[in-house]
Structures are given as C-alpha cells and as structure tokens.
Length: 380
Ligand SMILES: Cc1cc2nc3c(=O)[nH]c(=O)nc-3n(C[C@H](O)[C@H](O)[C@H](O)COP(=O)(O)OP(=O)(O)OC[C@H]3O[C@@H](n4cnc5c(N)ncnc54)[C@H](O)[C@@H]3O)c2cc1C
Image 1 (cartoon, helix red, strand yellow):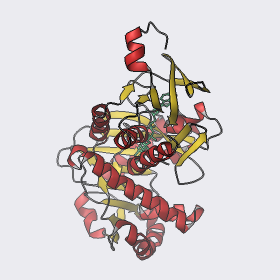
Image 2 (cartoon, protein in one colour):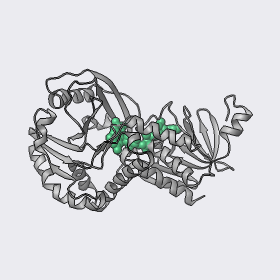
Image 3 (cartoon, helix red, strand yellow):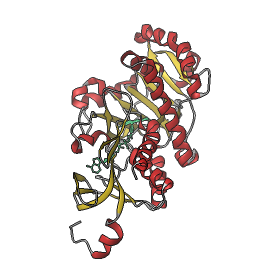
C-alpha cells in the first residue's frame, strides 16, 4: 500500500490476507462471513469501491420472492424446466439462509404475500397465467413445501384500491424485507466476525504475485492468497470475458400516503414493474424494458421516460385520484446474463467469482455467497 501508509497500518490492517473479497454486496458479505465461520483462523478482508455498497444490494426493492407466474412462464420459454426449478430452489434456499443468518426480525421479514396484477387490457394474458397455476403449484410444491402457492385472488382487488386492475394472482409464500436493515445487519455480522471492510477502495487490476495475488487498488497495492470477485454487474471491469451484462433498475419512493391500502409485494408486466408498501409509502420500480439498451449501463442515474412510466402507473393504477409527492428517486445496477444461474467458479488458479444473480440477489445472494465460500475452502 502507498498513500502515506504507516508501518502499523501495514502490519495490522493491510497484510497477511488469506482471502480478499472484492465487493461488499450481499454476495461478497455472505461469502466472507461463511469463510470466517467455517475457518476462523483465516484472515479475510473486503474491498469496496463505494463509500457504501454501491451496486444493487442497498438499492433494491426488498422483495423476498422466487418468481411470479408470468416471470416463471417467461423463464420456461428460454430455459429447460429442470433449470428453472433449480433456480427457484436457489432463490428459496437463499431466502431461508438469509433468515437463518440474520433472523427475521432484524430484516423486518413480513410474509404479506405477493401479487401479480393484470389490467383490463391484459386479460388474455391473465387467463394464460391462471391456466398455469396448477402446473406451477405442482412443480414447486417439493421446493417450497406448500401445495397451493399461487391462487387467483380477484376478491382482494377492491380492498387494495386499484384502478383498472381486473385480475390478481396471489403468491402466498412471497414476503418483503427492509433492505437497509438487512445490509446493515449483515455488515455488523461481518464486523463482529473480525472481517474488515475497506470502503472507497476500488480494485483496478489483479495480478499473480509470489504471495498469491497482487490487487492494485485506488488506495495502493494489497496482497492476498485467494481472491473472490463479487462485483456483480461490474465484473467485466476486472474479467472482460465473464458473461455478465449490467442492467440499471430505477426506483422511486413516495411521500407517506394517508390511509394507504396496499400491503405486500406486487408485480406487473412479467416482473418489469414492481411495487410494495414501506412505512405508509409506496416503493415502485422497473421500466427497464422501455429501453433495454439505455439501461444496459453501470452508470447510476434516472431517466425521464422511465420515471414518467413509473409515475403513470402510480397515478393511474396504484393510487388513482391521489398524487403523492415523490420523496426519493434512485437507481441500482444488476448483473444479467444468458443463463439464469449465477456464475460461481474458479476463473483462474486462486481467483474465484460469484456474480450474476439476475435481478434476484435478495433471494439468491446468500446461497451464492455460501457456495463461493465452500469452493474457496476446497482449495485451501
Ligand atoms: C432497483 C433494484 C431492485 C431490486 N429488487 C430486488 C428484489 O426485490 N428482490 C431480489 O431478490 N433482488 C432484487 N434486486 C437484485 C439484487 O439487489 C441483486 O441481485 C443483489 O443485490 C446482487 O448482490 P451482489 O452482492 O452480487 O452485487 P452488488 O450488490 O451489486 O455488489 C457488488 C459490489 O461491488 C462493488 N464493486 C464493483 N466494482 C468494484 C471494484 N472494482 N472494486 C471494489 N468494489 C467494487 C460495488 O460497489 C458493489 O457494492 C434488485 C436490484 C435493483 C438494482
């Protein structure tokens, strides 16, 4: 390390790493925690480019979900049934692992149910989805452990106060979490385990060295025997050959809405739009499909077409007749690819990666991190 580093800092903070994790999102944090829990003698550190985690893990919607009917139908069009079921299992097991690691109360886990909404103009599609319910309930039963996961719930439409929503499919097993509390609790666990997170420390380059690997960072050079790349959408900055494509997701949160009726997590248009209640406000996100190319970026930012589409949905469908103020707008960056499964592998001797949760890392992230840790431990 350079940058006016003292002998003390070098010896106590910056040397002797067995494993250095790059990226402090849910995957990197969980991997580090699992490494340390399984092998307490290991010295594990985490390097994070942002002053907070700056990808998707503190920017997401907090849906503890494993797929709405239309999302799963879409996935079944491009992927074999076997693989879709394996991915659903990863999402579900990931959620169980997240709850086991942090506890339900620490993350405000609330199983309020998830709903897929269909407007009047989507009725033909709604019927197609309803027809698939029995098939999906049977296929997912052994994974989730419940036989009637999805059900038509049109009788609940009026209670939510929607406009022009004609069909509703309930997912009884879907829940919501408080994303901020989840990441805060995970960072606390990591600190308690003796793992240091270095913020504002972007890894610029990775090279083999006599110690193992030299990591050139924005703060200087560091050494580690093993390296885990958990940078998700940014993975190609370090390994251009990795099959990960960034996808920016835009979100807004309203001011508090008196008498807000919606409770739960809601999906619309094959999952391209999603909204939920959070402390009497609505969090609403999506619209990437308006211009996929423009949103295929690692740059943060919101755009007028996407924000307008979100506001249209908010005002016309979700809380008709009310025009709540918008208190927050932000974006986060997801990692997608041509396969639904994350990439968890050794990409060169001593360098591993755990990336590409395909927009479902709240669900899949904990298991992805754990599997990466197991893989690294096999080589130590
Ligand atoms: C708007 C939005 C809504 C979402 N909603 C949901 C949801 O409801 N449910 C769900 O399951 N999933 C959701 N997701 C997806 C989920 O948030 C992600 O899949 C998950 O957070 C990915 O975690 P990660 O650890 O792989 O990546 P990230 O959280 O992106 O972490 C990667 C980290 O690496 C850091 N980094 C990058 N490059 C470097 C470098 N060179 N050096 C050092 N550090 C670096 C970044 O700053 C970042 O903090 C959503 C995502 C977004 C953006």
